[in-house]
Image: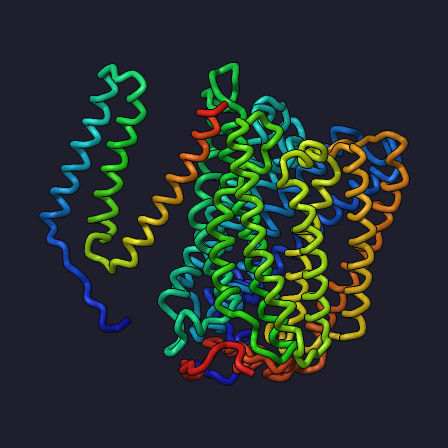
Length: 529
Length: 94
């Protein structure tokens, strides 16, 4: 095998597409995920924009109430199950994890390809729900019982699609855990491993241990819908709150499946662009593991008003406040890393700083929801929507774009246009704040979420929010067009354009098929400047 | 990593474990015919746990593997037990 050519040039099949969809190369699989996720992201954004346009004025604007219910359901299913959960681990984890730990591939390359195929199968099955039976699902992405087995809309494909997607997540998590345990380069002890692989390791455990729970729960809904077995329906002796318990036992740790790799990305970007060792490496590692661990026990904060016992509410509130501690440790460490660093203000650092600001707003407004008294006021209002979009989109989304701009030269061997990248960043941030900030206010004043109509008093806030959505979409378009054009026509990238210290910056841009000619021997920590 | 030894389990042991699992399955079915009241679920869960332990120990080689792997499994069981306990605590105090 010629080790001099990039992995793009190594072709096993004559037909171009087969070199992608049958490839077991971790880099090609990472890119397959990227393109799949990008396609679904465009659909998800269009659905989100449609919702904001509907809300630009009270009453019916561009769609009926039932259509609105279907749109927010599918927006949620796409954004959560198809984009943010696989997101960073599937794209950047696949592409970079083996390189960052000095390996030639993941531990199970065929299983890795199978994960992508399962992802596609799950996505197709979930999409089928839009075009079958008595109309698209209208339950919201949470499929809450008892409505999810009483609604006449087409629920089964959506639920089974989510069930199948879980397998993809489990297999990816398993693959990463084994890869990290077994395939680190000689000399790379646990405490010499970069922080992005650490975050993937913690995420892998959550994927492995939590996902089966939602799988079983979704099967229980299927059994209830098709065979009238009373798990959740009070009329059949079931308990609807049990559904919420089981659903959130997975879905809250799933938030950490999303955010931990995002934090890992930020932990890579900040030292590189501060040209300084990360402050408190061990504390960042410990906080990653602590977030993953404590994150298992906070699911009930989604259910304060669902009818749980007061004791459970008290316990979940306490645990929720505890999980804020390791998150704050990370934020302080990132800021301390930048302090007296030699700051190189490039586009990836813009995104990392954007992450810090938006994630902190998301995190601090999370405390409003973690405290029982204030949660009762704002539960199921636009406040909650604003909060989780700050965490999910403002946190994970900005980290994803940060990762894209950081590792783009490595992935494509090209540089992007910095000026357009900055325009894209600023447009995104302005649009984001215009879109979601008014929703905090709207929620505080009582505007409920998931309604296609609202009282006249909420009109002003909704106009600003809908206008922000248009600006945000313009920002996204600039970012995507700039990256796509640069991937084709950008300037050639050097091996290490950012002066990074981790192993991926020692291999070619783009890497060769097996990444390294000889497996490196690691002698020092990952961020020793 | 290259120097790790692999423990070879005699086929006879696997056969004994298989027979044990089949026997426990019959016992699981058998106890459903006995009126145990509120202990019915507990009985079923104890038998299921016993079967899981046999599978993990022998078929999945945990008994012969590095101690760290046993610690990992024990931690996972503890996390799972804590999740179940917290869920049931809600029902107990409602």
